[in-house]
Image (cartoon, one colour):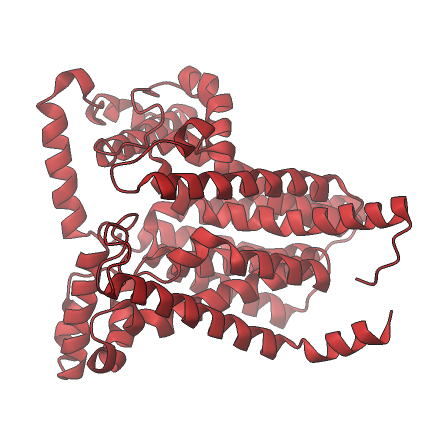
Length: 461
């Protein structure tokens, strides 16, 4: 390794990288605020920096955070606690309470929390990459995520997505520790308790993804059993830690009440009413499947829940211009099985090229073309992820790789089954895309190493 490379590695410390990332995020947020304030793209951002083009409820959420922030400033803590606002808005109100007097109800007042989530995601991505592969892969993955355009843009808004990503990725990392490491009883209990706390936070932020928590820990436990059989080694501490994470996660999903957003409930009632008044394009309601959902047959119950969830997405997205297969109904197990290839195609490849050159109702032609460029980059990520998946790896590393790939693949297909709107798919898919980016970072390193050996290129990396 050359002296220049050694000098660079000494200079590029984790703290310096985090400071650079924080400064970069602040610069992006200020730029978006300036674009909105000076009305450079009035159809995309309002004067407060809210991205009205892809986060249409951002103004309402900003107003809620502003009102809650005022209550905190006035010392009305009990009123703040009783307010019927979602947990992520209450977190934003803490930031608004401090900065709203300086910057008003703008994205600048939300920046401390947004930047914290942004940095936390990068830290967890780096640790996932380092745990599964090595430090270099973790660094490549973190830098790729940090610069991913739409993800970066979403982290400047008052959305629950960044907080959910922090929780879900941290939950996956804790399960990965239990899967890959040989740990003590104390560490196992700490990870188990931490997994329960993270599961609770993730559930409070986005309870619609509760099943993902259970599937993640169940998949980790299954792979852990495979590892024990292969290595002929029994690790009771790891097993107890996984059992604790699973028990706490199931308890959270089963017993912690869901947050009922009054605004969303009202919107759903209005959409359902409009669907009922327009039978030719009406999406089926869940009522006909009620008896099926209560069936003792678990497969039929799962099919009913998938159909019901898809119906809800159809109703919520009926006014969207970027819907895919919104007329397709999944009412039985056979229909779901036949639709799986199409669901995989939607999950991994949407938006399709025919959408890249159209003009949507909320976003213009330029935004559609931009999404096309980013989608092509996603295709490259998926190809490199396959390279990383199939590359050489040791026993435990191989199991960890399949753990990440399985979560990402199942998540992509599941979204393709139930989500009909591309904009919604974009936001919900981030957690799985970020896992693919980690695998793609390994694939990129492997490809570059192969290229060096093939060409005789002498470059220190």
